[in-house]
Image (cartoon, rainbow, N blue to C red; front, side, top):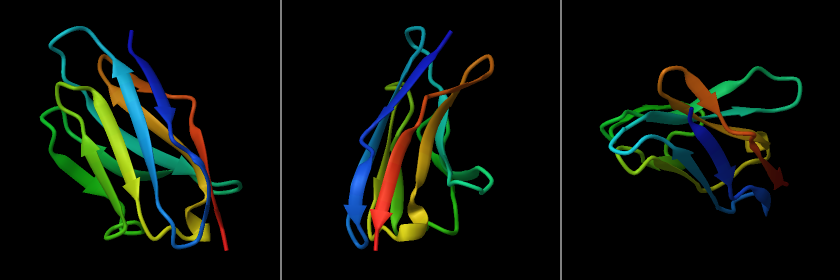
Length: 115
């Protein structure tokens, strides 16, 4: 059983920055593949970024490339999403996940970008 929890969402003006954090409880010495999805009202869930169990960033969505950075992962089982130059279209609930025996999800954190 893995417990995933996000934090760091909030309201920010367009052009601003936020950092989301995620922690995944896991058995000692285990490394998890972790990542971020987001979902805006009326839209499909979109994968934002992924870090492999070894700490390598394996995916960044084209829609956020150059503005968002994913860091962390590996044995620390903590994940971060650094979001810069935020746009109103980035407004969504951001979900962290961790892959172990199955995919575990956090409850999500709201990010709202005002124009």
